Image (cartoon, rainbow, N blue to C red; front, top):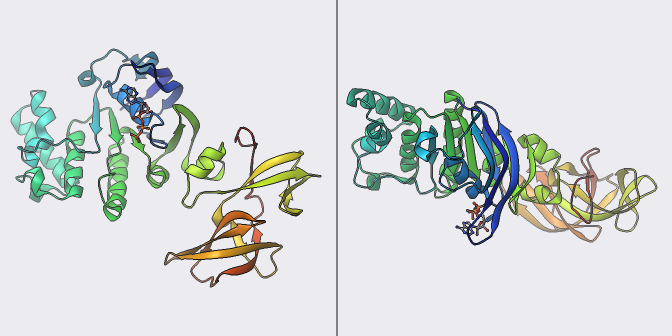
Length: 346
Ligand code: ATP
């Protein structure tokens, strides 16, 4: 079990590029933390520093109160699961799963017992004598998990482990990984650029942008109270609508004097509204122009304009609507306000 602490952890690559600005966060014992952000935001660099695969330029990394900046990767008690699985092609599943134990000179009988236990946990028993090339992508992913599990590490690190799988398998594997982690209670750091994985798997999400933390919070906090327009538009599919508005005489206004609710202050403001916080209602006080209906089975997305600005509304499958004008209401208390200049939540 492990408690992780990053203090002013920073990475400057030899070419002078600062990939991770001084970063601080703590991870509790048994917690599942997801690092999420767009390509190039520094999430892999951060993970690789924790793993010991990348030198730490500045700051301190501690595991259970012990600084490990200069501890060899093999001595950090970490198991890492990679995107490409990193399986040995010439070895059977059994040998692949047991490889790390054999390296540590574990007795053969104990290796076999641990491999069997992991294989049962991961539904791999019938594949133990196959080679990786004789497995599906999902099965290979499970072998990579198995190899991590048998080592009984203090910390799991995942680097985009599901990005080579198709959508259906990704969904299945994210449930499997999460429930396995719950069962084993191993502290985990999981890197992804997929905001759905972040939302569904994390106890806490860390959103990175340009080598900096934008926000740390539970999935609900990140979703309902994004700290910035960046987080608001990165988390959620479709993302939060961001509309130009202004504050005037205690009201949030958009367009030609349309009031959305109460707020103190004056001047321009960015107004954030989640697509599902809008309801079609004949008595609604706002006019939403539908340009395109996107049919998704269980629900529909209506793409159009509110007060002349691009806007998306999420409705249930029972709401039948075509292109044209529709009266809508915005759910009270669902409006978020952001500073126009900085994008920070107000
Ligand atoms: P992705 O999702 O595309 O893997 P990421 O968020 O994991 O992105 P990193 O791989 O951590 O991003 O890279 C962060 C930044 O550091 C990127 O701008 C990248 O180009 C840069 N970078 C990575 N490795 C090096 C290196 N060895 N030397 C210089 N710059 C690097």
